Image (cartoon, rainbow, N blue to C red; front, side):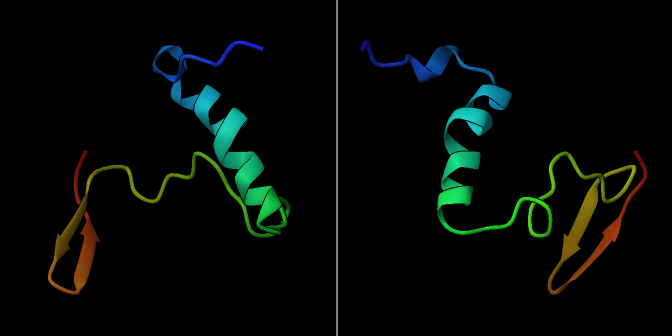
Length: 57
């Protein structure tokens, strides 16, 4: 089997082929501990020291 050229893979491909299997192998529960493509704020997240806030888009 020929090695995969990872440079030609999309971000989604990398997640499907490498990251998700590693998370499952580590014992995580996909239904309880795992979420994808989650939006926290409509704009940027602004970090100042120990505080953060959501900014305008």
